[in-house]
Image (tube, rainbow, N blue to C red):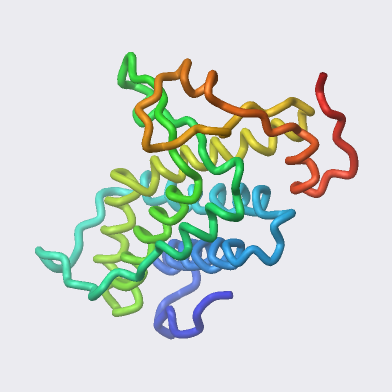
Length: 222
């Protein structure tokens, strides 16, 4: 639910800034609720939906002309909220499918995939979005839009895109009745090649994920 104090009464619901802020706040509220772990069976598909919707807002920011803040220097928003607890909650909720393989820049040749964590990615995205939301709630609308646009290109956009691909892959493995090789012994602190990612991965069977996604019947591949 939207914060009733988020927008000025003079702002139209059709205003670009209002729509972007609503989308971002909705994502933060919804994913924070998922991290509580009250409905673990629906966590993965729900996160897939939320990240997809967030990237629509990101696409709108990306397609918009460069946003220039009113002030030359960014106003201090105060202490950044700690996301460590949120990260840990996501990690516990998503174990053992937390680690995924990411390519940072698809246009940079000969770059091997590196391991990343959905929990880290979600916490990073939320931290970036909260920073802009602090500007927005303080009435610095141009500053908020500038930050969200800048960090969409530099950080939370690529991170959300990679996270979306990982979540979509999890759901696809279940829906297509395919075993999922992943994660047992795989650690993001290790410097692993693409072959290592496959070789060191354990097995998480479709049946295990299927139950968590609420599917009625999933056949285990032989």
